[in-house]
Length: 352
Ligand SMILES: [Zn+2]
Image 1 (spheres, rainbow, N blue to C red):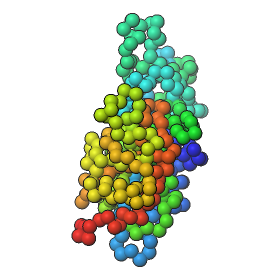
Image 2: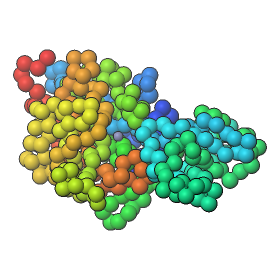
Image 3: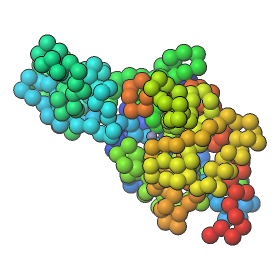
Image 4: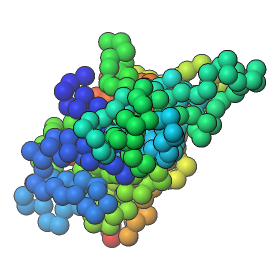
């Protein structure tokens, strides 16, 4: 990994509270774009203009979401234990025994370390041993007295998982939020490497994707895109318990090009164009069926845009041990850079 990936993945940014990661991404994008602003929802919109001499250039959007799933403090009990609500799609099975960081709004420490606990096995019934504890039965233990906790933590403070970016092996990275910080990293890298192109390229780092794609609409409104590619994790099924007929993407086999997900049918002409770009330039790719991404809200906003999603397969999404392969990250960046050079030729002459 490099410094940029570390800065992007280790900055906190629970949905709706993306300030820290937004600052990181703003600084990384600024030197490579002609214009950059933050819209009213909190999205970062950065524009690299088409090369001089292109009359009314088409608008190509690359979008990745800044937010990560996390928690919000909902109650502090008389002993100082903290209850929480999920922000985004937390999987209750993954929560007990996690280390977390509480982003405290008061007191002298901006962050407090904690652990998520369920009641200990010996306190419960035999059935409890085999049960998945729902989120409202879990609590955060900060290892502090009630008075100390009360002096520092308030209802409404946000909580992130404490896991940081790391190498799992020479080829595979592990992190708590690769959905979608690996996408954000690919977005930044693509803008760094992009040469002069015939389209206006908008790099959009969106907010609140994990709570139902709430950030993208305002950015879509501001831009009025012609073509939009969201960058988000593809779903690998090369793990135990995936049946042969469920298998599509595999870690290390290239960037995933979304054909369809639960919110979007990838525009077939765009999907074909992305596949053609990969084939002509020897960029490894695979076909992916996904969950749902920012592409949904830009495809049908305003006059509409051709839209789909690409991204490195990410194992164990919405856990704190998400895995991604370096080669898939590289393939995703390569596709973004190369496709920007070819996008203008994809739209029909009678496009309107
Ligand atoms: Zn995502």
